[in-house]
Length: 285
Image (cartoon, rainbow, N blue to C red):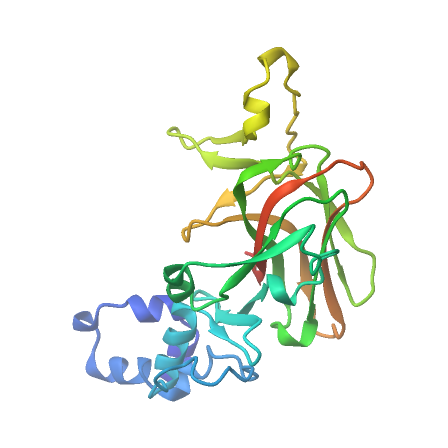
């Protein structure tokens, strides 16, 4: 019975209506032996007090970690479990990211988030807001052993645009990912644009105009061509935007740092208005 149950999808197990299951199957589906198959054997240590009530079972722990992220010691990184696969997914706070000129208030400032944003996600209390730079360089790093083996992951920057923003549309930013010092994959990113599904289900691309651009005559506005090879953000359920920075495969023998980079350092264009909450690294089907 346990062998059959363990091969079931963990998300499906939680959704099975109890009335249609025999009592013996219900008992097996709730057993620690079954849910141990879905919990990673190497869960990290969590910050004190993050799991307010210790889940009484393996099933309870899985539900707790798949419903919302839990902060790690230092409270600069959070982890959650993918509900469908049980894989470990992480978010690196903006404070944990090396941001060029990030500690210089002339260029960046740290802003406190609203209490409901923090409580709703059990995440970070602050974000980095770009006041203005000519050189944009944001990096993130996580060791491959913190991730699940033989799994495909993608990295996403979670961000917003301030009420006043400018020159984040063009030239495009460059995103890259490297694993263990190997050659990195790169792609182009446009932060001042977004993608959404239309009423007919067909995705549409949109460019956000800053206030000074809107005041320009239409003939003087720059025509930005958003081709299919440029990654565009999408809106998240929590109200933030996210844009994919690339993907990678965490293989069986992988043992090294995963580096994620977003940069625009060559055009000499003054950019402002970016609000960075962090970089999320999660599994990708």
